[in-house]
Length: 488
Image (cartoon, rainbow, N blue to C red; front, side, top):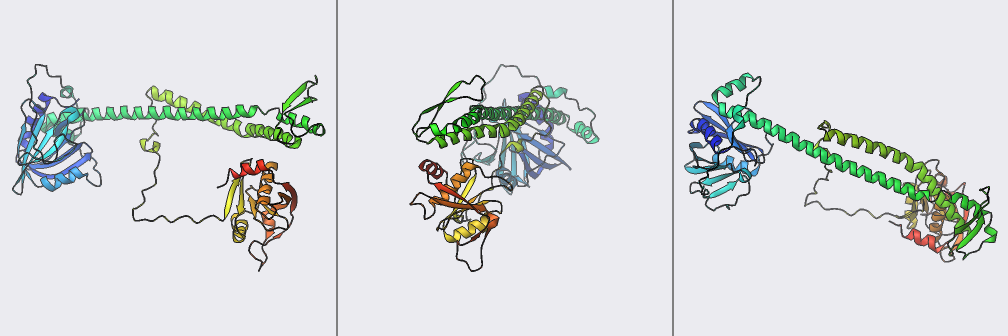
């Protein structure tokens, strides 16, 4: 709690005789709502600490130094320019109020430092000789240039609260603390009491921050785990699609485009049941069969990639639950730092800096059905740049056979086999961005990029290709529309 009326009178009785007539040597603002005044008086130096924190508002001498910011805050700078080097003429307390006034004089100018220890409205105000407000530590109801009038205090019959700081005992005091306590016993007891209070408040605040952070982290981890499990559950629907595809493969000759269902005998089941499989009537039997196989591959991919991630995420959730339990029991995380939980922001760009537009890419980027990037050159020069500067040796390279058109690169890892659907997607784009677009069908060659060479003196876009393979492709509208929805 902040100093009450009697406590303030007690500490003023101790510091008034020392401060009156003293010179202000230095002013610091160690925190947002606190000030220290270094005073030289009667052949000795003392430090007055003024705190306007709502629950800790107080005024007394201190024996310890506080770390100060490298650049003093604006209010501190203002006080330094007006008060440093000035002499304290008088210190008074407003009768019946927790308002202390320090009257000072510097260079024939009179100033008054009004220290209001009013709990939530605690503040420090600098007034001139006419009690007009010059500046305040916190935002004040009195505007700059207006007269500061102390509030009228109504007599109260309420009893004064007890002062727990009076029973404060300094355990194992150092020689400096013993000397300070012998000279200023009230200030020494207040300093020790509020030091403990601030430490307890800081610990409580840190505990609440850790608790909030742990709960948010656990909630996010559980959400991610739930998303992974949902994805796996969706993929589970395609568990049997590989078997359905095999059954359809044996009956393709009996099926035709336009069917909505296919009735097949399940030869994988000893009971030989009859299955009715839904079909897309807009697709031919082969493409319907490929759809079943593709969905089964999604299931296999989910099993391969999602299960390890789910297991890892379950371990993360368990660890966070254990950590949350420990924090709730009062066991703090020593590695926690409030700054580590804040997202780093890029430094602000100077106003004078001009942002240069990024150079336009010489290729379009598409995404295949398997999530693999497909790069398509825009011009002859862009084709050379795409093939020999952007493309890597183990990427797949495609081009329409014997026709002018774009070079196409499919991003692959070393040793990776290109998925069948991705190859069809890349071949479709190769066909579309060539002179075969009008016919809608033709032959596309493909090979690894490392087997594509550029002979000296060849025109832009002209290359020599070895170890190539060929693929006959027809440009399907649905595939093309899907790819057109993914460019960047």
